Image (cartoon, rainbow, N blue to C red):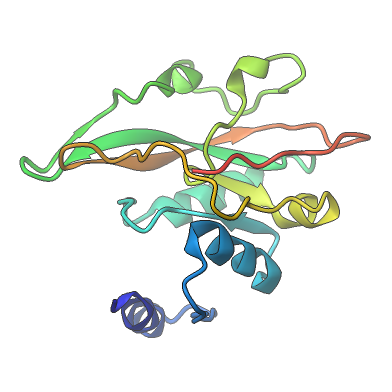
Length: 173
């Protein structure tokens, strides 16, 4: 597995401040939990290793987060399907209805239908994760989002999640 070397080479080329963490294989939950421990920023995201993201995905997410109200604790991304064999992208993910009106922000107490169901297509406030002791469950397996050469590719969008007196949850992918 060359993923550590590949990540290190990308980090070196990007000129970004960061680190590549190498550890025994503890599964996706163990890797993500280790990332939560090591993270130093305000926001954290957990893209899957087989996800495709646009070249400006993180830049666009940063723009939205920079303009977001201080009580925004989650940035959700619209997921598009990418068919490798034809190099085509489709906006037909089952959860695309959350993005139909180009909403900039929603309150989940008023719109629970916007709940975030996967971690790979979202950015989370790191302080909320740590304060509430949120971690991924080791060994938990759910359906894979890749099918027949298709890949789901996130696009950015913001959700307002009130935090006063509430604990949060983190869905696994």
